[in-house]
Length: 475
Image (cartoon, rainbow, N blue to C red; front, side, top):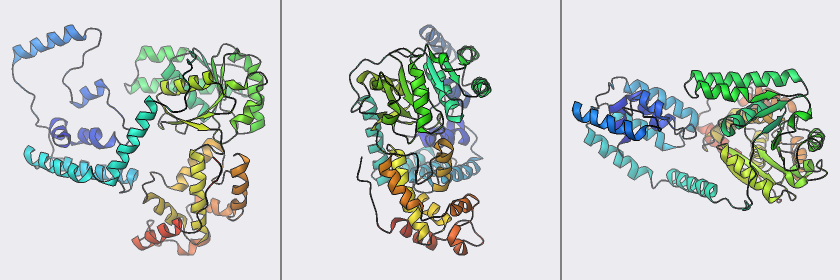
């Protein structure tokens, strides 16, 4: 209680907005002690080694100096402009569907003119209105489910996870480089990358080291730690480079035959305890494990999402042959990487892409009935989806080459259905949508304004949700 009133008075409007609104909307980003000191939220930061002695010494100095509590007299003359800009940022994230960020901004702005008692009263009124609301209750439920499942996961065996002391990443593309960076920073173990083009692997290593230097420049990583991490990431040549790895993750081209060939070759050089991990977004992990002639129980899927550093979800894919030790190790690694694992079966498109396939089907039906691309995007945003479907489909395409219909890379149960649906909409329509035109319904495109009128938004929402609602019958 009181944060929207005390923080602006203590550190100013800009820092208060960052703390109360911006950071929570960025995957609940937390402040480090040094950042809190820089913002003025704390007066002193002490190192843990000498914390007790230095804290007592600091206390004695403050008692001798006197002066009482620190004043809350920050300059709030810019609060209206700061809040105006913040509202625009919030609009880009929640599109008006979550009331709490807007109320928080109202309260921060009010701190510039209210007394502290008036601010407390306004904050209490806001909480009394928001907490019983559906948005707050849904958020509390989701948070409880996620946190409870992380602490007490369902379906994860009690087997002792293996210790991971060296990691290999097969491939040096965008996803592979991001994954190597994540493993390097979080596990702090040697990481080796290879690629069919050795120069590409070298470039990936240089890119990782450059990112470490960038973190140092931003004050988010110490110079000594950056030098150490940069020294233990290397580029190798050939599969022999993975001989000493305890975990090898393949992030090569999304082609089953290619991945099988990689896995089969790796089995010849790694130890019998090495864990095989695939980052496939759509291919059958079971079929991939058929390349392991000796130990298919060592194969598991870890499907990360792009951008890897930002998105917390990881689909942990268990095949019928995956062993308890392999699954327990994969789950333990996911946790140490700071990600939220979700255990899924090796089913068509797993969970997330399965849902996206269903969403894409509804959107295609809306387009066929005459809705424009702008209208379908607007209808989706009004449901609280943070990214327009067209933009999210471009992210997916960059990540895995799968189309919105997942025609050729998902398992056959969804692939066969998707093929029938994909024939309805010509490829040219997708090309036009990427250029910002409106495909078949272009004559109904909005004139003068890129944002449809309320009437059109309501109509598009109805069209996007109308029509026969088919559902997948296989899990």
